[in-house]
Length: 351
Image (cartoon, rainbow, N blue to C red; front, side, top):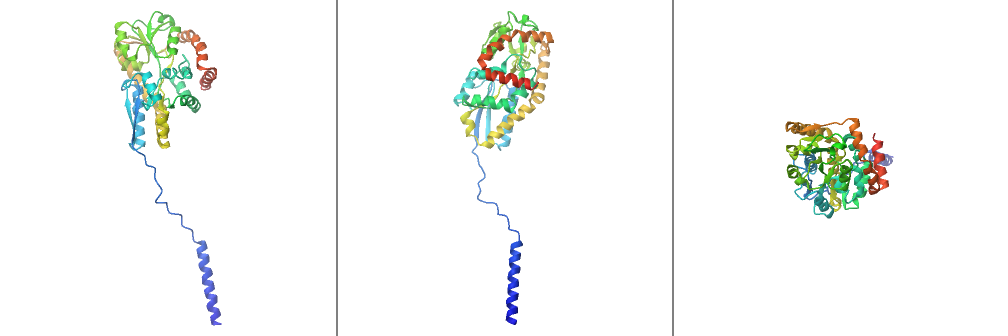
């Protein structure tokens, strides 16, 4: 009997231990101490642009560079070469496509010399203001569509972090109607769109290098140039040109493009950091950079005796729009019906 009692007690102890083991929580697996944390080698990229130091474009470029450096703990350094130090816009664009320059802010008229679809962005009086412009070009639909085009040219288009309505400055007289442009020789950017646009409005056009504009104005080689108030101030053109009209005929924008091999070689994390930095500037640009700079440039130009027309009447504005309808007719074929319709419909959808 005693022996049976001992056996029963042992059986109960074993059952109790089994129940305890079954109800005891299973400890979570300890982190794998051998798991590798991604490590990246330090890298330096070169970025070019044609605008002067301190201009809206240069401020945007520096802000992007600073954010990228901060978010990569200084491992990714981007060196800026402003004011066309690496060559004019065409030279830098060719360099990015070939891979001798890593990244560049390229004006859409320069892009259009290789990819005619980009003429659509410069169509005269397409955008009523910069707010409408940014609504369109920063949309996912527009970015993905244009990137499909630039990818074929060994490029990655990151975004449109800057944009300013272009104006017209000259040494002769106030311009309010197309009639006022007749007989004036106006320097315009490279790309046939600007030549055709200003000739349609009645001007004689010249495409001399941007670096030669100041002396050409002084010497009477040209009478004026197509630019915004910021450049009128930054390039000291206001010392020679005493008339400026905020015509708003098109938007000056320089999307950031990167050589495709360089872009594809970057870690995905760094790619996203660059995209985020560009997006930061897109979101901040109008109120944080453009409006303060335009106000400051306007004050400087007025102090230097420049007569500034900031707004045309509805009738004056419509007269300019009517004068350039031939440009739309010509460039629909150049741009291609599909992309031409896409951009016009996209603009209309944001109104």
